[in-house]
Length: 229
Length: 229
Image (cartoon, rainbow over the protein chains, first blue to last red):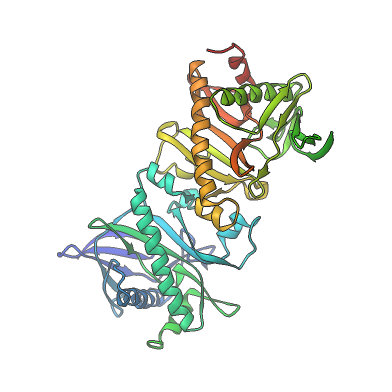
């Protein structure tokens, strides 16, 4: 297995059949030594976090597979902290696609003049930001994505529809466990001409509440580990 | 004439026929006492600036009228520093619509990882930001505008098409005078069910170059004051 990339929270290896292996690490992002899945630098190491993230990812990717959604996921080995995935091309230098059901966080920081924090949105709101640490992950429109050659307008449409579908499936599964999904951050890539979900699907990708209480990213799997509901 | 609004650079009065009168002032926006048309606070007073802005606005609104574009402009009285306009409803708390021909400024601050400063864009790029001093005028997508009830998707389409048309007419007129329009900031409103151009069209609304030299907003009218070209 040849190592081809060293990431902040995962390393990437290439298999002989062309597939990739993501090796989850115990390093987490944050600021000033405090865990924050939205931050851009590794802040600390938490024993066991790689395994928790992988268990969570495995759960959600397999949930999507059961629901007929194609993703880059092939399989996972929790003991080895590895996930085998299809090789995909990222869009530009990487995009984050956010689906929101309840307005909070950066949406309120930007649009707080028009909407109150924690307002339930009338439908699934989708937005795209560039992965660009230096420029604080700026939001970007469909037109700008097309003009900069990052994503065609057809790919944007596909990405938006898949985001709604995937976020809806995850929201519904969490709801069965008494949890409320406020928003979720997804990453997509190009694979044989199709736009498919890539990266991981761990607690750090989503903002989840149990009633009025925020569920810490590392606690989400404890709710999932109860079989099918 | 009844005063109905006191603005940073203009006061607004209402006429008996329902039309409005904008009275241009010599106050200009900026930061730390330096003129910056993009800033959100009044920084200083420049003798004659109100008249320059009005002459420039009158010129461009009449150019648009000649080209068959409906705007809120009725007429202007330069000696009195007043412009009579149709009453329009602004979208939400006000939007800024930016048309870009050459990438620079905030476009590069956001998307500089993908494009170099001063790259000529392949077409007219249009984007919308909220007028919100407190939140640094955040960019906003078509979907967010619709979700927040600021603009319907049909109105967005109309606004985008009119922005391209208006920016194109102004770009072409400046080109005949040897000037290059990099970008222009427009404001629209609702008037009898139509989306039309409102506010002013002065040098502070546009980034213009004469060869490699930036043309200061207050200098633009000196290029226009040469009759039809």
